[in-house]
Image 1 (cartoon, rainbow, N blue to C red):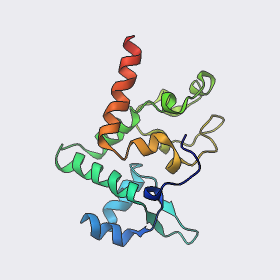
Image 2: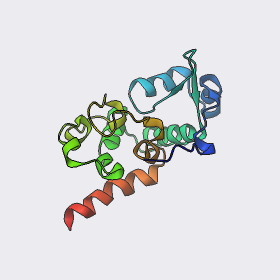
Image 3: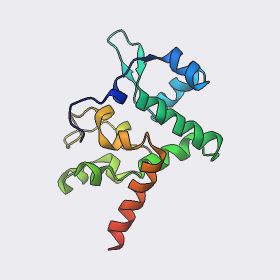
Image 4: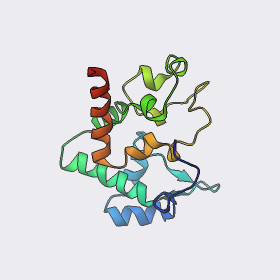
Amino acid sequence: MKSENIQQSDVPYYSIGTLARMLEVSVHTLRMYEREKLIVTFKKESGHRLYSDSDVERIRCIRYAINEEKLSIAGIRKIYSLIPCWQIIGCPESDRNRCSAFKGHLQPCWSYNHKKNVCAKLDCRKCDVYNISSDCGKIKSSITGIGRTLIK
């Protein structure tokens, strides 16, 4: 897990409208990405969504996958689900046996309601697994990294 020190790129300060204008997408599109579990949005007590520079990069990666690589939302979710979260955070085997993210492969680990495991009390926005998914290159290396450990 990342330390509790928040990096400057993780500080949420863009409103949903500002982010939509920056990325030339609709507010509806950003809300859909949240509903589809591609992004975890920071919400103020008032319910207003805020986004960080890391979120900007994550959404650019998503937009690239959709527009240039012709991946569907379901395809992106599937790729996110393949990130070896258990390996990245050092999840004990006893927790893995009870973990829907470890057993499943249809949605990213941050979309599950974790109970009785190492992730239960963690903030997904601060998790290394979630943060890896904001960088298209790191997603690939994390997935291929698990393949190398399985081959040995």
